[in-house]
Image 1 (cartoon, rainbow, N blue to C red):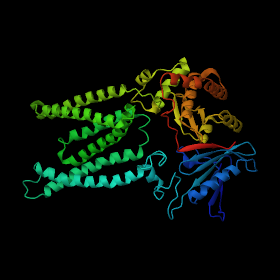
Image 2 (image 1 turned 60 degrees about the horizontal axis):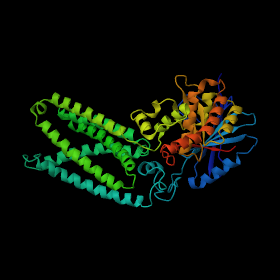
Image 3 (image 1 turned 60 degrees about the vertical axis):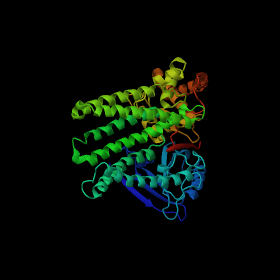
Image 4 (image 1 turned 180 degrees about the vertical axis):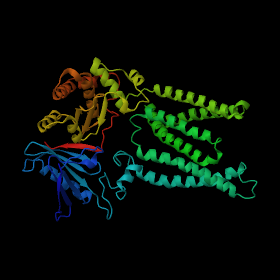
Length: 515
């Protein structure tokens, strides 16, 4: 059947908002397809675009949400999803008891200084994408007052230091013979430029890792420290290939430096978290200094053994023997790294350890101790490959489409989770393995994440007892509220730190309930 479209663009004479309506017949639902990568389309779209400054529009938008939460001739707003980019998505049950969705996009002004949604006035002129890249998550509330002043002065300090490093490099190369027979220092300068360029390309890896993934290291330092060594090993392979392809020295060495710089970008933050774990008396400086002693001693011994190996004719004169020796030592290195990380005994609860703890509590009503749980923790396995699979930060639209819920069932779902700071449903379209969707409300904490994990494992272990999905969800919540206090008490008795849970609440999308 051909579809007829009627478009009515219009704007209200106001300084704040511009509205656009697009109708397609037959009208059935509201769509926000630009938020999803799926191919499904829905024939009704409502788009409300805000072009006002964020500081002025945020309050008015909150007031409009509250005003629209009551019953009227258009329907009843039951909740709003707030996205980090300023967009809002309203879920409305109309007078015919049908669920509809409204998307309100916020477009910040480009004229003048941009008033961004940030805490404090520091760097308010800086675009949000850059601000998120160069500053810690939650700045300035998550750092001390002197952080920004220190970093602004540290930046030119590092710039001048690297200028000196570049100038000195040519002198070092000339001293070892580069350019000494040409009668000019141009050869040494050219070699220095190539060498520094190699370092610069490699530094891009650290730049990207630090800016894009700075908030991952606190939650699983073991995993990222191990991955750093894997990536560093891959970078060494490029370096090892340079004698085979000397004409491609610069690209091979640059790729090697890039990989090793990425590895360093993962290694340094991860190990700082580990050092902080060691310093139980607040003696982080002393722990770091003594770690430096151990590292330098190992470096001197390793360099000595490496020089001894290079002086061995069988290794220095045979490239295959050299490569095989490197491979053997590297495998031994990775094995030692894994063993060293395995002995770490964290008393904090991250997502991997939370899974182990709640699974034991659901099945046996007991929790493993700190040592046992850390030994059971998988260092290498990604969260997405753990079972049962938990998908955080899923919109309500995807939740209800996956379950094909009716409006009355949606109301029942909202009422069911009224006392919780999250929504959780089982993905009934996933037939290969058990999967749940979780979204968090405003005000959710790490404890909310922990509770959602417990409920997930109860459902996973008791999924087949009833054919009614709502009966199972409701029973899981009853079990959660009855047994979760016992879990916390057992964790406290076993020495776990339940006051500082390393469970991250996703912030890209939060839900505000209005009914």
